[in-house]
Length: 420
Length: 210
Image 1 (spheres, chains in turn brown, cyan):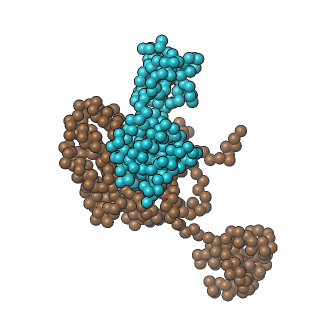
Image 2 (cartoon, each protein chain N blue to C red; image 1 turned 120 degrees about the vertical axis):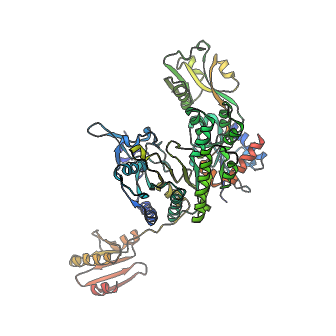
Image 3 (cartoon, helix red, strand yellow; image 1 turned 90 degrees about the vertical axis):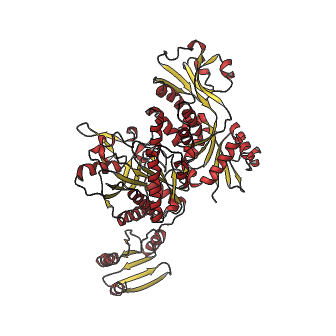
């Protein structure tokens, strides 16, 4: 029989020392960028009622949520994202908000995805922002610019942010008059850039030629901003034209931010079109087969909780970012223990005093807990990569041992604390 | 410049794929020699070919371990991975069908408790449960699927049919056609964005050849 207690379930990871240092560092860098743009952090609970996530325009399918019950038999879920709880909070607790409100978060979310190591975890960390109550191209651009700067701050170098606009596709589909099922089929085909499938589907309906041409060209409508010019001339419905205008405005603002080199456009980005209502974007980098981050405008979500306020946000996948940074060999400084203190019984009181004093000066001090003789202490320090040993003999006398130069100096407590 | 990695399904499809890549000016002569190597390089064009089991091609490409893959539509449907399906290579054209004894002709829908033997569990479920709204029992087999209805393991099978010869020799007939199958060129979603120029160049050249 397998001993389950020795294993972790599929899709979760132990994050050990080295990775933990890197993860915290990345999170801190990103959090400080969020803050520098005036975003306040909030912390929604880790589990909530299932009903919060079960809304019409929900992004997350119910079979991917971890569910359990409370004592009244109500269904609870481990939060599958953090944006939806924030939408609930905005609608219920910020009733008299003076827009815009800028919020950010860093926390774990849980999804019952297929158990894939690394890329698709069932417990993963998201860092994100929500810009609430501002529905302008400037607001869209701020969220995208902030995402780029957060990724840059994490140390990532080569990456691409790709912008789409779900209204473009919605406008085209309204113009064709296709029913909901056919639109959904079309959406999947376009999302997969399946030109053959699109052609078969388009040809099985009577759609005007010029509209047909645009739909057929959708899989190739990605690349630089020039894509917009190409398609604009042939687009005739107001919704799609507005969507193209919106992308161009956001792009021009990003040019003023000086960030256009990170931006490309994909008009066939049509995932989650029930959730998003405008700009939609994803971040990509080398060596990672999945998007690093995804975001967009979701003006309908907060209304699900009874308050009609626009919102735009992004979530960055910290675990994916970590593996991308590792793949791109971005170095992170790790801290190390500065000194090891070893004392004889007669020096114990003084040893704690010295340790406290040095720690308050910002040094990292480890107390030797072994029972060995001085040689053992030396061997222990070498094995742990600690470069200095302070031996405390009594209230007065100590020895400083520098393992790098192999120098031993006998001195007094007074002299040490004065020096350092 | 980073290598572009192309995953090919071992076997007939790999040979066909190599021919296409040679026609558009890449060198993979090394692959034609009989050997056990699994990685081949075209240094000049910074390409790397890897040989993997057909059903693993979508996995390699979805994860980005390969940027491009060439694989049958049957495998793509069965694996259901999140990829860009860019080109129909039109090679290996055949059909995915439901087959069984001739006595079942026209009676398939009225058959209660359908047991279906197949290598393609997902395709069978998609077809019967989602498309036709019928509950079925799927029996997963790994080969010689035609045998199942003959020995009473299942009522029908879901399998690929090229000429129909194997079915005929075993006394089975095609009851329903599910879809057309042929080889496809697939691309990883991120690679498409990060290496757009080089990948689209390969895609366009291959499209011209077909």
